[in-house]
Amino acid sequence: MTDKAIRSFSVRLRVPFYHVDPMQVVWHGNYFKYFEAARDALLESVGIDLESFYTSHKYVFPVVRGSVKFIHPLRYKDVFLCTAKVMEIRRKIVIGYDIKLASTNTLCTTGSTEQVVLKMPEAEIEFKVPEEILRAIGHSP
Image (cartoon, rainbow, N blue to C red; front, side, top):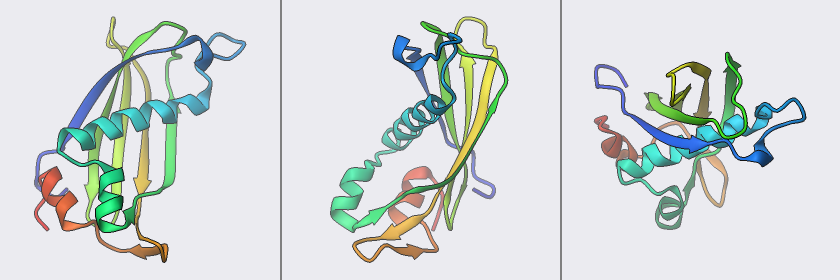
């Protein structure tokens, strides 16, 4: 985002029983669900609804890359904050994530996702983020 302030948003979540594995820790794939909840809340906080954007502009934003670093396990009933931060937005959307226990602020997980812009129904990749989204995030086109 060049010289602009990084946009971020946090969601408060609680680990449900069905997200833990037999070792009583959150199964690794569920962290992407937490990332998506934070990413969706971040976009919503600046007035972006990707489903409405698809309906009106015929763009979709698939995740093409994701990474997770596990530092401290989340367990059943843990309350945590998942923070999504816009790290890059011009040709693609890169969001960074931190998950911290709400009670102790212990860093549990970091990660990132990259999304590209596809024009539908052709599924053609665009090499720029639509201006409406750049403006909503606070980044001039």
